[in-house]
Image (tube, rainbow, N blue to C red; front, side, top):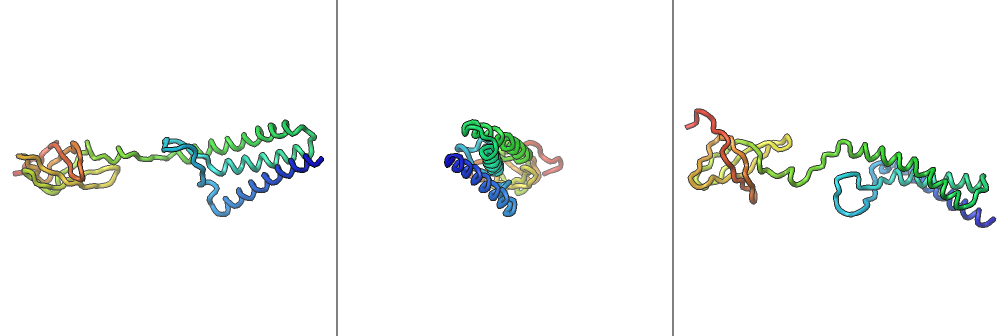
Length: 184
């Protein structure tokens, strides 16, 4: 008899702790956003365990386990298996929904997305024969500028359209793409 009371107490404590955490999360607003990281590094996908499905699992597991131990007379192993299966369903369902919602519009950028090589732009400050000038280009909808060095014998005039070949320490090596007609 004492064993049944202890087990029922464990289940009811899990239920109330899970329920209080769910309510606390909804009041303070951290239930949906919070997550536990599992594993190292950035895998680029839903590599997290949201706290909300975990709290739902604990709440349903505790509630189901309490009801089954209190009113069914089933063996402890059967109760634990049944309440685990019952609690996994809403936990997994909620995790799936959250993973889809949270990653649907995820457009995380890598370092390569900031690489200026290959960008087309125009010279805004002229440079010739080893001097440094400036070019402007658009990267992800934002106008950016970078210093350009004219190679020996090269003349980069204002308005010339150029392509960045490589960038090193904030200075770009460029190649002429198109020169405006009518320049002197």
